[in-house]
Length: 232
Length: 83
Image (cartoon, rainbow over all chains, first blue to last red; front, side, top):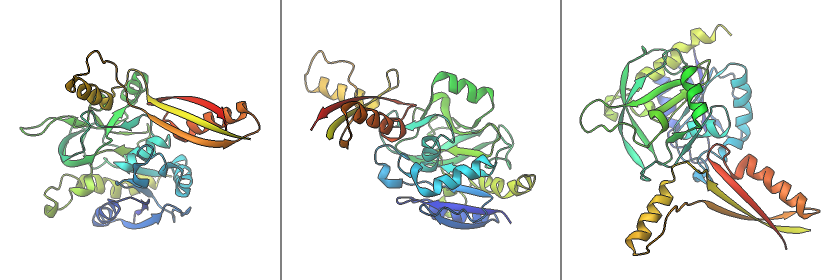
């Protein structure tokens, strides 16, 4: 059974959502405190959403130096899977595990609403249950979600097929690109597809009680990745 | 010796600065004419113990490179004064 470590930083607030979503997909999920340095043989590490360290200085800037992050960097270097959702994505960028940065939304306001995403890469740890071109509707909830990178980095991301999900317009009342991200990018990965970061919250769309179920495929992906991880 | 270090962190030129734009619009709304290119950054002040001014500045620059500024989106300026 896939072992999923959900990290907890002071200020994480979607940690339980991520844990439950992983469990519901059939994984064995457990929390790892940010001061711990043992990921307890995790197959997949999730850095959940929230406001680690109050977003002081910059979102993710301080969490990136938490003791647990050294273990995450080793895990990632060995080809282990790492997923950053929202604040987790910000931490991965601050840590240099993914390129670019997440800055204040273009219109300054915090956005919390459903967005439509196009799946652009379907062989990553977090999207392998999808087909390329699939569309899903899941919520965003962030103030610092504008993905930016220099043009050369953006070109490289596109050339190496590292854009995982992009904001996409489908239907009235749904705005594309809620935050002004470069090239409508909502999530990216490393070339191997083992490290994925995205701003939207699939863990908040896995049950009818949450009003949407578009996020399930991300966690069935994570559970299915086990077979691929077996190649290591 | 202790040195007082002033760090100014600014959004990189060319990067959309919505805070600067919002402040610029607010100033215009208040009747301040002729204001343009408003940008909003962050000022950080710290005491640094070091043997010399150069050493204090070098330490401060390392702090900027590692934590105080994001090399992807921000530029910084370091000024050192003797305490």
